[in-house]
Image (cartoon, rainbow, N blue to C red):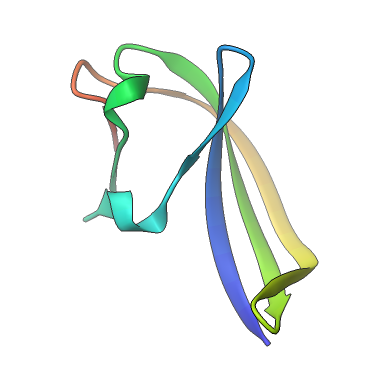
Length: 72
């Protein structure tokens, strides 16, 4: 079993995932979200055979992305 964290944003009637690979030094980058304030969900779950097994933590926050699509 393992754990993983996912970041999801609600943007214009759709859900946008911010891959962990796009988070560097605590800064999230998603250019298509530039100049927007969105609801972001952080989801931590436990995996079994690389599939979600159990939700460990969920948190929600309104976040603002700058003109370059960065949030820190």
